[in-house]
Length: 182
Image (tube, rainbow, N blue to C red; front, side, top):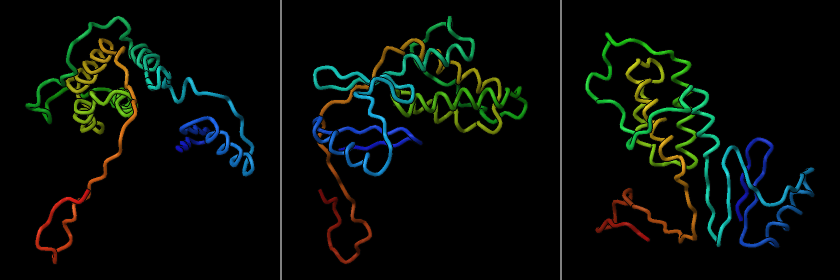
């Protein structure tokens, strides 16, 4: 059973409807809730259940980011490469609008966190410059947005998985052989 809470929104997921309804019954004893049935959208994420799989998509959110930054008709690129790493702290560089840069990178962070882990590296690189971005950094952020435009049909797909827990016992000094325990 999984219960997700975001401010005043609850999402309850379980192996079958009986478990979910039992949990909702318990929640109703504690507070007033509104049952809205199976979820289709949550926090800008489209949720589809197909043949036992769950598909997550933020295509509408991605379109709204493109519109917000005037890039609906942007040229599509095949990689999210952030422009070169040399001279990233160039003090002679032209500064970018800090609020616009922060809004763009923040939007990319949300997209990356929810459904686009492939954006993690370039977004992490761009996040380094939130306090003093340059035009070069803004161009890099827009390139990631262009890549997203080209690949917005990519979906995160959740399938049945098996949990594996590995622990490294590195603080136990009186055991002669240190190894991970499964």
